[in-house]
Amino acid sequence: MRARNPLYIMAKPPQEVQAQIAALPRNDPSRGPHLLHVTLISLFDLHHAPPEWLPATLAALDGFVAAPFPLAFDRIENRKAVTLRTREPLAEARAFQKALVNHLLREKAPIMDGTTPEPHITINYRGDRQNAQKIPPIGWTVDEIILTESIVGKTTHVEHGRWPLHG
Image (cartoon, rainbow, N blue to C red; front, side, top):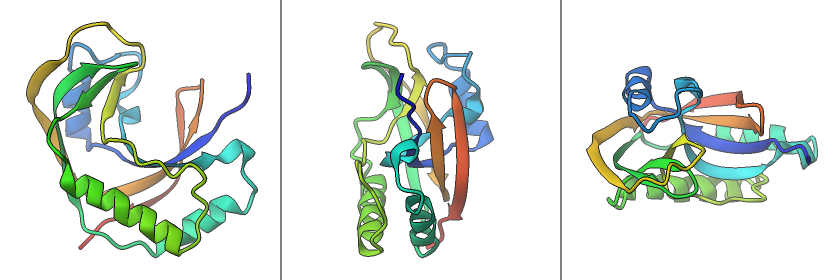
């Protein structure tokens, strides 16, 4: 199996929100609540990237300035995995993602993948074939971003830095 260590910029819910999510019956209890996150940008695979890419990304993020933004999810959906989502446009989150990509491009940071997925939280990586369901909104204000390496197949996140948002 080919080693994969994708690098993401993500937001993690605070502990009280992690607990709310962990209590959902469709959440996979075998994954710790500390792994719950929203991927804001997929950057590149660290395992296959030149060694200078990580320091260049860290330097670019040091100069990023943005305001905190709200996130809230009110649906559980089964796509390839079970996820928390919303039908709301999440305009602030999408504007944040766009500003972050623009900043990284301006700073010439390597963003090989550079995708900005629709904000969601995966709560079970194995689909459960159940229908979508409405839930009371679960949300928080994102006030920091985290540069995280995912060790695929090991259920492990390696944090490379955190940046507070203030606006």
